[in-house]
Image: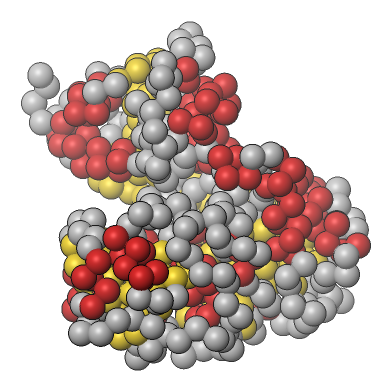
Length: 508
């Protein structure tokens, strides 16, 4: 695979050949970069980097010994007093004319992507890679939490921050390394997983892949990178993931399926790893019953043992993610009972149905605010379904109010109808304008292409192009005791605290 999509990026070096003695990371404060920087520091590398702004992750890295500059400049490559042995960049976030990339080329310093660096860090460990269009961060986080409780102390790199551990990466003492495998730029093909989990597959990132077929193909290529003694673990509740598993079996890959009893029965060719026998939503999550069909070596057992645990994170999608985590933990030699206990103690990850607070007094007393990263119609559907199950389990007549910020013009245009259908699961919704991120605005396109497709007879809807006015717009739709969700991959997360403040204050 070539990485020459960005000017200045060196051809992919063989794993094990990169000199990691002095590493400079551009965009070091980002969720992915800060994690690998922590691991490099723990392994004894000299670490430097830069970011466009100061942040908590930057300060944490500085306290651990990294040299970090705010702002990008050629001289940042000498923050440690000498040139780095390698520069690490991100395909999507860092433009090719970045002065540090230019300076690296002028000084013949190799430039690699984060995925290339992660491949280096994974070398020598049992590699556990979690992939899929949706649910990577949650499933990776659950896997790590379960394995930690089982005493395995895995190394890990996660795209979000574990609530309990308070970190997104760790250099562990155990034999396994758990990480997300990002498909957005095909970088997951850098890894050679011993356990590869695919949660689901649904066309996305078509700005990169161009066609649905190319997007599906990258998962087939990933499956073929599973080691000869390893396993591909697929969710059979997702039709495309199940189809991937069936194709991988034909290609000679060892496959294990996870999912509900009905879904597993519908895909008899796929060997069963773990079966979700049932789950019952309640006001604080779900009660889950599972049956484990394999041992630590992935071999079928004659009498599959049953187990139960409570999840504090609601939603059927989280139930399935937890089953994947338990199965993965078993394949890394974790005890099933200890793994299940870890899942029961799992308190979530930032921006995945993250509880942000409850209004304690006034007209909106009892209203709870949550925040979620959902930015694809399937994710929005899953989160709003979970929210509705939560309020229905309480039986108090509360409603679900969503404040949604679309992410990327290309995704909004591609899925406008699907977003409208997903948001219709809320009782009321405020649609903010599009967060363009790396994309330039498209003339004549704004979030009204979503809002106008939502049926006002079933869902109260407001298009709010003024970000600063959003909390008041949300307040106008809320009743006391409602569940409010801020959703999206952009700046909408900043509104959760403001919404709480507006609801707690005197009515305007």
